[in-house]
Amino acid sequence: MKPASGAVRSLAQLLVEQPAAAPACLVEPGLLPPQGILFVGGEPKVGKSLLVANLALSLAAGAGRMGFPIPAPRRVLVCQFELPVPRFVGRLATMRRALGAAADQFLLVDTRAAGHLLSAPQGLGHFVAAAQAAAAEVIVLDPLYSAHDQDENDTRAMAALCQSLLRLRDASRAALIVVHHVRKSIGRHEIGSAFRGSSALHAVGDSYLLLTRPSPQLATVELRFQFRYAAPQPPRLLELNLQTLWFSSTAASPGPAAPRRKVERTDVAQAMANIGDSVRYTDLRGQIMHLTECSKRTAQLAITEACREGWIVQADGHYRLPL
Image (tube, rainbow, N blue to C red; front, top):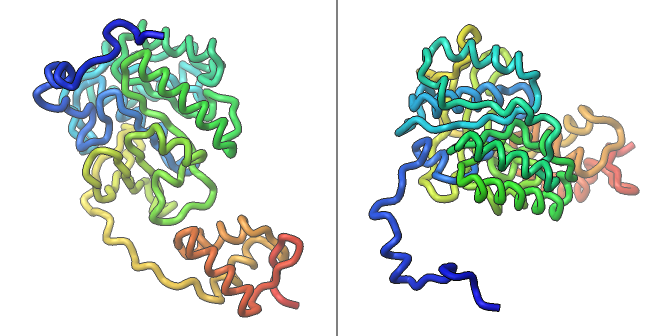
């Protein structure tokens, strides 16, 4: 079978068609490349949807209010699945007071997004049609788990879902901002690997933005970044104004990460005490990671050493303290 006419080009042809300079990112520095895919994640109620709504309004207005430069206004289509449309519009109206009418014509909302699944051909067709009707340059999907019915622990199922994201991106020629949740137990230094279905997501994501809350008592979040094509960025602290619903940079910046320490016997004992007398391996490992902010590998080594030293006993796939 012959290739489609014009589908095969020589290097000389491609070089002539190549822009003289790479196009600017939609959100700098390197956060959202043109037709890129940005995953935004964090624990429940950490502020992911508020931050992404801020970002959508900033993109539509062409205003970098949160410390991320935005070179030009963009047409943004928001597909959100959690709030009834009137409540979501009310949230946007509160945020809009800080911008005036700057974003009004470029921010568009898919009011019929709920119930459509990217993982189904008809649902994918709905989102493609909505993006084309909006002439969207950026599409927000918030949250991803409400737009599919796949098993997020199944790598093959997640890979198929990621192919749907790529088809949406290619058909619309838009960048995607995808809000997704993270695994229950993640280490301090995890970013892209913290997302559910991470092995599949790593194949399609260009940027990863992880929100964590340094203190439950403060309306402050720490942002950590992982980029495929851009230079690494240090963590940032943002503070939420509860009246305006806008995040802004705080005066303080996160200090250097505390040096990793060895997991001690007392840490293992405390982890056991926190989750029960007889626990599964994955639960024990996750609790150790949570207590000590260590990596998965360090927690695994700690469990191995604890068994070898007799601090804990393993039987029938469960772990317990010695009698």
